[in-house]
Image 1 (cartoon, helix red, strand yellow):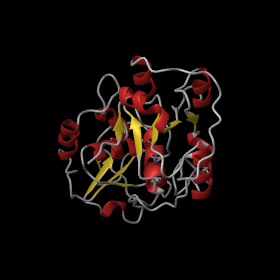
Image 2 (cartoon, helix red, strand yellow):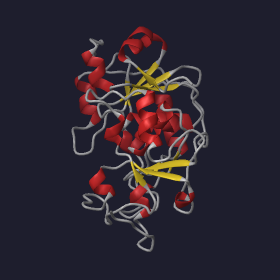
Image 3 (cartoon, one colour):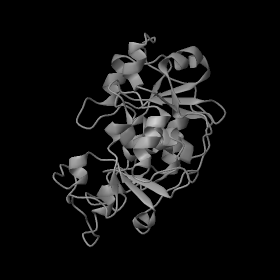
Image 4 (cartoon, one colour):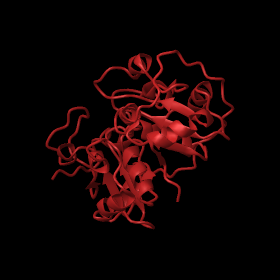
Length: 273
């Protein structure tokens, strides 16, 4: 299995032959566009998570969650504007240890792009490796990417509890229901096991080795061949766990609505522990 990750050194050596997408984003932090404008990988086009990698929720309590999957036409158009073509490799990065880049990786793969990788360690790893930095505006030649969703597995509220191994990617205190700073209900989906996204990475923000990740996920039953799905708060950072599982060689589905979608219906059961 080829890794869904790429190192800063490898990206530097093949930069001219790939399309790079800058999807820097952090809740409560500076906007990704401001960060991009202050310095970015040469040729990297900025992609906005809120408007291009997600749809706006219909209302504050939306079955689809706080970050619904984007309309396919909107997403494909955004990818074309960013220079994405179906026959050219794509590398995505952020400055959030892959939590936003994972969303772009998953969406491109779901829409059928065959060659997408995440820069391991993101922007900090690129800078630390001495990668070139540009402040010039990027206007890529439009790409010809055509895709439709359906290449990656998803589950919804009606069948998420039926999977053999359900993983909650949120912080442990949110999983346990001790705090809930965003959504109206605290707790987790019954039967879910917690694998916080921070466990996927080392102190320098790069992903753990495949062997280490296999051990982490095997402890909750997520092994090759098992029926596995993951969710988070809004459907974004769950893709970080899916990326880590892919590194470990485990196929898993996404519950796009995640906890915010589950909690939108007060009749659904909730566990706290």
